Length: 114
Image (cartoon, rainbow, N blue to C red; front, side, top):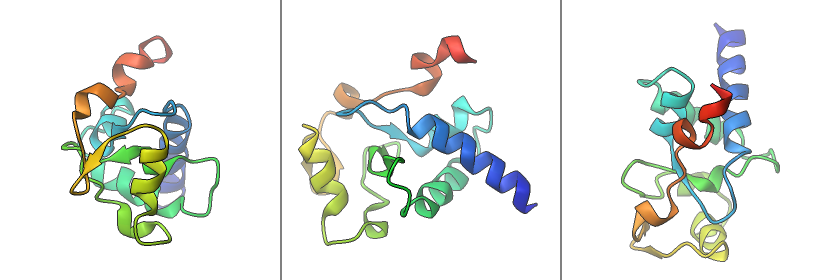
């Protein structure tokens, strides 16, 4: 089972690397794009496992409501929020304000790659 998880994680990382600066996506959107719509939690595990990988912008992956649910996996008190705000994303009470303005849907944006 471990090699399958590693392969899935790498696919998650490939998508995450494509999230543009100043945009976010959700765990579920990545899972849907990868053809595993019910695997949002596994996408979250992949993001958690990427905390030492500098080329993975894990801070750009949030829950479907725009909540910074992965914030406790980042060093520092508010690092995830600070990184997102540094990219121009507005956050209030640990939630992205006007999520639709920042949401990047890989299923739509990467449609040509399916």
